[in-house]
Length: 181
Image (cartoon, rainbow, N blue to C red; front, side):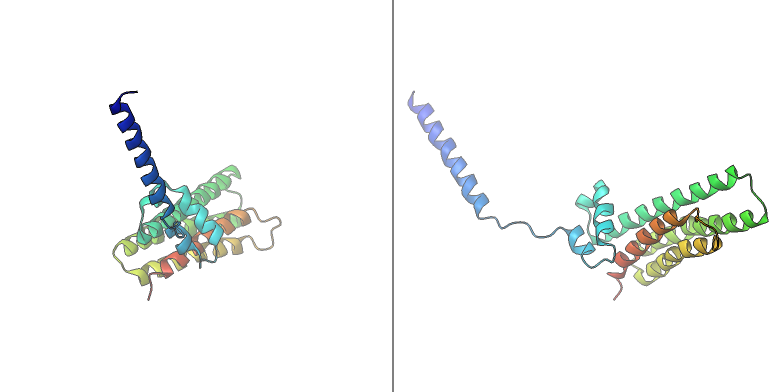
C-alpha cells in the first residue's frame, strides 16, 4: 500500500470517528410539533393521525397544521354530504318525511362545506381566530342537527358518519382554540 492510500485510510477513519462523536453529543429530538399541538386535544389520537396523513404537515408551522385540519374536516363533511345525497337519490326522494330528514341534513352539511369551513380557513389565514372558532362551532353543531332528524329511527342511517364529522370538526376547533387568547 503506498503512502497516499495509507493517508487516505487514516483520513476516512478520522472523519468516521468525528461523525460518530458528533452524533453521540446530539440530544434526542423533542416531541414533534404535531405531538405538542395534539397533546391537549380532546381527540389526541385522531389529531395526530389526521395531521400525520397529510404530507404538508412535515414542513408546516402551527397555523399550517390548523389549515390542514380544516382541509381534513372539509373532506369529511363533503364525503358525508355526498353520502346523504346518494342515499336520498336511491330512495327516490321518498315521502315528505324523507325529504325533511335528508333535506335538512343535506342543507346543514352543504352550509358547513360551502360557507362555514371556507370562512374558517379564511379567518384563520387572516388571523381572525375568534371568527374561525365561531365558524368551527357551527360545523361542530351540524352532525347533531342531522342526527336529530332521524330521532326514533332504528338503526339511525347516519350515526357513524355524523360522529366522524363531529369528532374531526371538534378536534379542529380545539386546534384553533390554541390561537384564541
